[in-house]
Amino acid sequence: MLTFLTSPKPFIEHVGKIQRDAIRSWLAVHSDIEVIIYGDGEGVSKACADLGVCHVPDTPCSPSGIPYFNGIVGHARIYARHDVQCYINCDILMTEDVIKAVKLIVSPSYLVVGQRIDLAQGVEIDVTTDNWKNDLQRLTEDGNASLHAPTGMDYFIFNRGVWAGLLSLVIGRGGYDNALLAFCLKKRIPIIDATNSITALHQFHDYRHVSGEVEEVMHGKEARANMRIHGVLHSAPIVTDADYQIDDRKRLSRNSRRDRLRALELYLRFQKGSPLLGNLIRGAWRLVYLGRRVFHEK
Image (cartoon, rainbow, N blue to C red; front, side, top):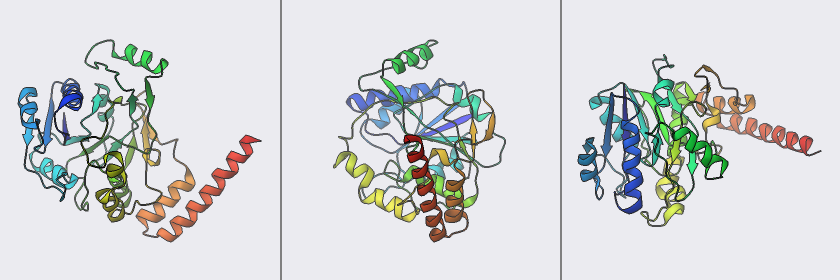
């Protein structure tokens, strides 16, 4: 049915707990789920043994030891049990609705992304129970759960072999999620926004495991390389740039959140290879957006 791929942080203290909870949630979404864990950080081997999931300790890494996305999906293309695969950050809880969404897609190649829901610090929720939806509604009403902006993506669902030709890309660093969308735009691979149909819950954590913390993760050397190599230093593709969307009634349709001028900008940049024309359209889009704001403020 579905293979989950991930490369976790060390399994220590609070981060270790939320990662175990995330993996348990993936295993619970369907009876035919495969999970493959990449990398050999502290506690990873034991966690994989405890949870009964596949462990691939040796995977191509950047000079700083962070796995390359290319190495992970390259291995999965050959060895994963299922054609439908999902690379997911190891702090994300998933529910059975991911299976319902995937069943709607019949395209031979695609990428599914979506906005996550951020849980506040200290908040826990067990999505394997029957009442998790009520718990989530209560947390939302209390201000302890909120929808993340469309600029960040934490899961990527695709079919086997879709990433052939992808340039070097370091996971978990700034720009890596935008780069995957840029690749699909260039290759004309349909991008599907599943925000309204897939519940992806992000468990709170800090970045103390990284020297330089969040600044290094988002703007450090590897993040800058990701953005430069894949052409997403400016005006990077985000969730709302998807071609299609799956709504809460589980219907696949054209993405109603997509702006036409923005779509033209991305078409010129990534499909026609004309960044200058794309920038001109981007300028026009900004003027239109500013005009709309001024009009509404009046």
